[in-house]
Amino acid sequence: MKYGICPISIIPLRLEARDQSEMVSQVLYGELFKVIEQRKKWSRVRLHNDSYEGWLDNKQFLEISSEDYHHQAEQKDIAFAKEPISITTHKDGTLSAIVMGSQVSSGDFLGDEFQKGVAVTEKQTHSKSNIIDNALLLLNAPYLWGGRNCMGIDCSGFTQLIYRLNGYRLLRDASQQASQGQVLSFIEESDPGDLAFFDNADGLITHVGIIMKDNHIIHAHGKVRIDRIDQTGIFNVETSTHTHKLRMIKQIL
Image (cartoon, rainbow, N blue to C red; front, top):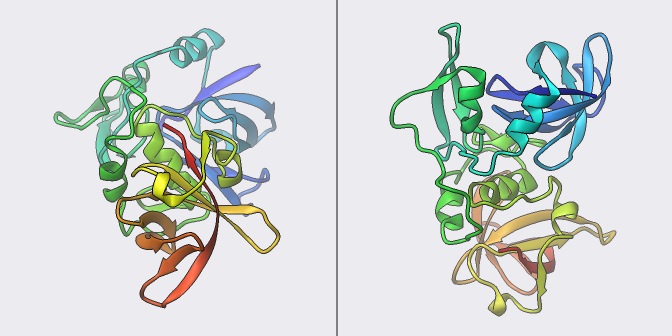
């Protein structure tokens, strides 16, 4: 078994081993993974954070030893960048923009230095007290299928990222996240920070958002936006239509 770490800002995680393939997710700076299949130019990897699998370009990641992988994976106090964009200086003197949710505690291991004053998460505690404040930092970020950062993000990448900053690991896709937590019967039982899930005409869960107070929801649809939510689903005031059909509400934290 081989192991790797992301030493740059973002690596596209692709469905197939070719540049033209769909991007299914992204690997952020400092994230770890196992290499489960390797070819001349591509490697199929399994991410440590959420066990998601896909193909990475071999030129874009750093192979590390089993000992280094497990040492980093077992760290308890992981620090994540909590501003949309931060800056790091690599060993060779070059600069990189590091996005929110990047594992900056890996910087020492990689030999990188972050600019003074870079905001990082405190000791990880399972709390939803800061979830809405964190989510609002990404308001108006553009939608991007497979995206996990402020320059482009999808619905489940958004919820996963915000929960990550608050000490909880969500799975990658909305349908996977729906398997976590406790079901609530009514919107009125929910608190800001709980998750709402939505299904399509075939009954498949395809969308997720974060409940806010006063029957509002923040979610990634076209962009990260705030809409109304009721027992039917998400109501877009601009178009006076329901855009998503509510399937369930879940309390994760």
